[in-house]
Structure formats: structure tokens, C-alpha cells
Length: 98
Image 1: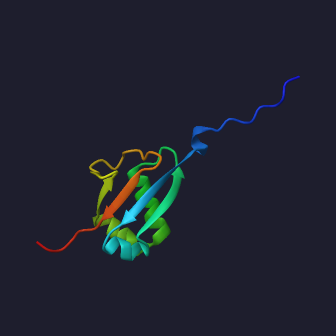
Image 2: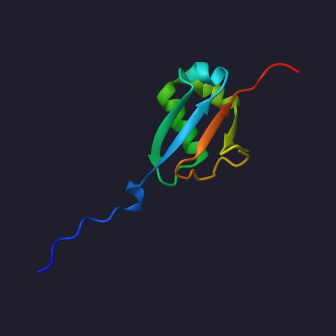
Image 3: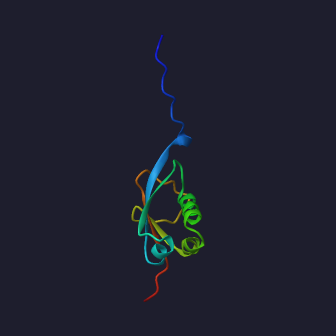
């Protein structure tokens, strides 16, 4: 008789941890400079933004709608990009000045 094996982890049960860094008005709207977020594997940048808006409310949702984003220091042009474990997402609201 063999010992029972532990259940395997299904892909939907896996998570990735992402660091979100907020700058300027995004920092004020989020109420923090940065945070670590655990998300289901396969989460996209768009999914992350929806989760952040839901967690932090309307003020951050407005900032996110106008912001630009960096993913691991590279400008995000495709919000359907899947986030990898340990990714860093920077939220950059529009800046005034010239």
C-alpha cells in the first residue's frame, strides 16, 4: 500500500506577487508610496488596474484612467501583458510643467 499523495496545485490556485509603486497624485490617491499585491497567475496589467481601483476607490480609479505605467521599468503599451512573479508596476499620473 502506498501513502496518499498531496493534491496537486491547479494553475488557477497559483498566485504571483507584484509590487506597485505610486508617484505624485497616484501616491496621494492610493494613500501609500507602494504596496505588494498577490494576484492569481495569469493576471494582466488591466486586471491589476481593476483590482487596484476596486481596493482603493474612486480617487485612485480616476488617476489610473489618466496614468501611464511602467512594467519592470519599460513603458506599458499593451495592458493585456501577463504579470510575472516579482514584477514591479509604476503608476505615473500626468505631470504638469514644461
